[in-house]
Amino acid sequence: MILHQPNAPPRRFPLSLLAVVWLLAVAGGALPVTAFGEPTDSLWSNSVQEFGAVLASPVQGTWEGYVVALGLAGALAAGLNHDVAWYREIQSQRNDWQNKVMPPLSLLGDGLVHLGAYGALYKYGNDYDQRVAAMAVEGQINVAIVSLLLKAAFTATRPEVNPQAREWFTLDMGNLSFPSGHTMTAFCAAAIFGDAYHVEWLTFPLAAAVGYSRIYNQKHWPTDVIVGAGLGMLIGYTVRAFHDFSPAEPGIRFSVVPETDGGRVVASWSF
Image 1 (cartoon, rainbow, N blue to C red):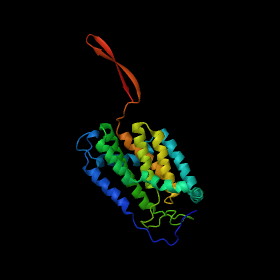
Image 2: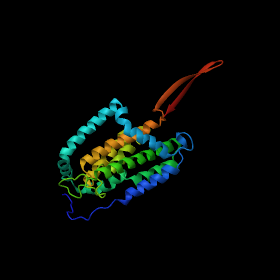
Image 3: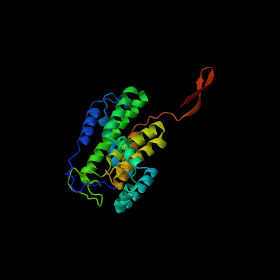
Image 4: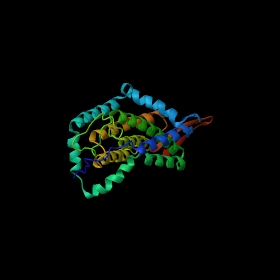
């Protein structure tokens, strides 16, 4: 069953997006990032460089990145021709348990929720956790910028406005469907935390579930989620590449330390 209000009042620019941008501006401008170099560095200074790298990525990518981009481009091309059909198929699978699970699941892609989690990790985590939390905030800054620019450029309607067809370039700042900001946030975090803690097997399925929930909750079309996933991954891995620190892979390592009277073998391990 598809819920639809044909005479719904016009939508206004969501204040939640402005709240996220404001919090990012405060954090990015005031929080020193001593883990990444000079104490005078800020999240904004890193984010500006990373944003440039995101824009330049098409000509500076890797073969693996091009393969992923090609797959996403193919999915986007197919989605633009089958967006309504795919959306209807997902809506036809509605049931009671999904009705209960999908709304709270979307919170895993909410920018304010992520910022709160990053702040807690930065305050209570160890030095490595603080570095990852700072990276995640940098990623969220870029997600907010890219998301808002694209949403404002395309002003595409959401399926809750009209599930029978989508409209582009409406010039109505209440129509901010393309791309999915929740999905971008979730996949950016999945790339950063998955790579930093070697848990991609967990973070990416959770991000995919967030994307699905946005379609199920009638907030986005499938193509919104496809593009959001691709951009989120691009931003997340770009931010991660800017910081070359990484915990050692789990395992036992041996090294030889020379000394004046011979040498010794040192064993180290990480979990």
